[in-house]
Amino acid sequence: MIQKASGPLPKSAFLSVTMLCNSRCIHCDIWKNKGLDFLPVAVYRKLPATLEMVDITGGEPFLRNDIPDIVRAVREACPKARILITTNGFLPQKIKKFASLIVQADPKIAFRLSLDGWGQTHEKVRRIPHAFEKVMQTIDILKKAGVADIGLTYTLMGINRQDMRKVYEYCRKQGLSFSLNVVHDSPIYFGTGKTQLQPKPTSVKKDFEYLFKRQMKSVNPKDWGKAWFNRYSYEYMVHHRRPLPCGAGENFFYMDPFANVFMCQIKNWPIGNLRNQSFEDIWYSKAKQQFLPKASVCNDCWIICTAKDAIKQNKIKVMGDIASLITTGRPLYAPKSIRV
Picture 1 (cartoon, rainbow, N blue to C red):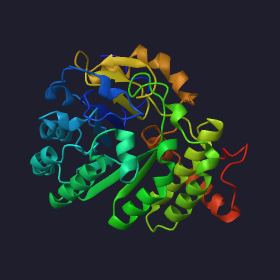
Picture 2 (cartoon, rainbow, N blue to C red):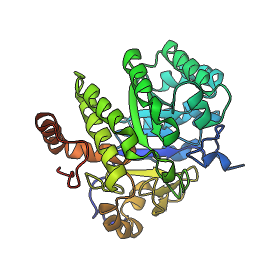
Picture 3 (cartoon, helix red, strand yellow):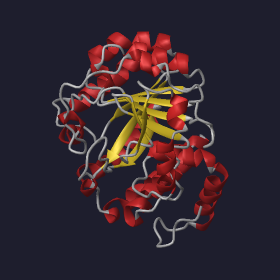
Picture 4 (cartoon, helix red, strand yellow):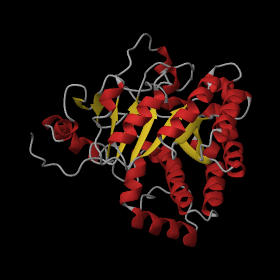
């Protein structure tokens, strides 16, 4: 056993259980993968028990027929974890078939569905007929199956910038979680050349101001954290600097469908393979040590999956910055706006 010399085991994991996808998104190239194998369920039982959040994603996870088994395996391996399934919602009848089994495996299961615009806008982004209607149908199916934690994830681009407020207000009225990510590149995951799809910051400034003010009116402190994250998503588009250091390889990791473990889902920084190694050997490996200095100064993304743990670790600083934003009315963007 390698000596544990690099700190505690991680708290968050992002698991791509397949790189197959039934969507044709303009901001993601995963759907171009063909004929890839599925990792055996047994490998997921090797995940560390320290995990507090596990995001089961793809590709499209419901292209697998063993999603309930994967959820069960993750729950057994990670008893403290909040488990999320991220789906495009384009297989409503299959989701209906599996929903009760998934809830049995984990009564507190969370679902996050992608919705990148209202009506035809979502269809233009996803390039799938009746995309919007299928998402709405899946939301109804999940509610009837007893899933209490349902949310929508909105990837902001120039093509859908006009619908951000509409999707947010729909979530607020329906009691759904709303997550916002600005489109990014990832050479090991959803492809490159995607950042060029971002809107011009000036074209969405008022929308970000609106979102910040609305979320700050919530009685739920989690919404305040989201408001802070979304505000700095705008500023990241302008100056491309993270307001908080990345915790890749310290707080979280990404694993692809072949059990390759990476520091994160953005950079090509592999540190081991869970099929062939124990997780502890991967986490305390020399491979990880060589990438940690790079991760600590990386500014290549500011997305919720790489920011969530950093926000939790710096909760006091973030709340202080939120208070400053409210009391001073600081502009949405200033050249020296990183203050936490």
